[in-house]
Length: 114
Length: 115
Image (cartoon, rainbow over all chains, first blue to last red; front, side, top):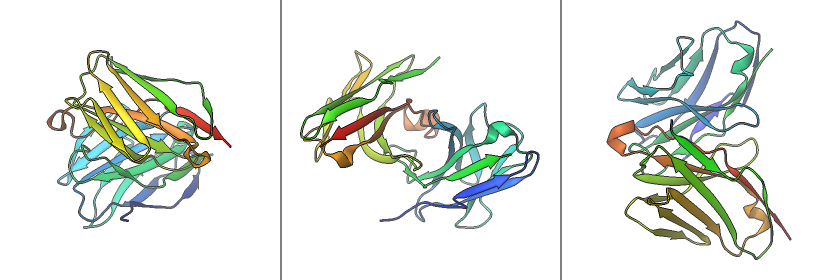
């Protein structure tokens, strides 16, 4: 069954450093998303991406965050200057259309900011 | 503001029984409602989607209902098994052209099935 692949599975970074989280969505999917989940809290929407541009973003997704689809397969989330409160699981997801047939999530990247 | 409520208390159930989970939403008129399963440290896994014009949807041992008048969805796991132990998330979704697929999740209900 097709999968969304995320790397790395765990990243530890120092506060103020830049991190890039990588995702390979399912190949025939057109819509891509990033979500995050702080430990013990609910899964929160960050951003959706379609046709090489951001479709929608949440209040969490401020100027420190950016997304990119640098080639035909990868989808990345960059955090420019990490804060302690950015520590969370980050999930990438993709869908064929706008989620009405369900989203496929990756296994996540656990980001720890120290 | 939009609100999604799921039972925060864990649901402990004996193997073979039916688990029933509730999802209530307010300030929302979703055209679709999705249910996901999440295991610890893993991403959500899509289970079922129900449309606003559907009263009930089934998939194997799972059944979902959607009452737009009550603003509620019920999720049933029949003949539950220990492998069904997980957290179950509901996610109402507005019409596809409205929201570009922004999915908002409830906090989830943990189900624990004991042998």
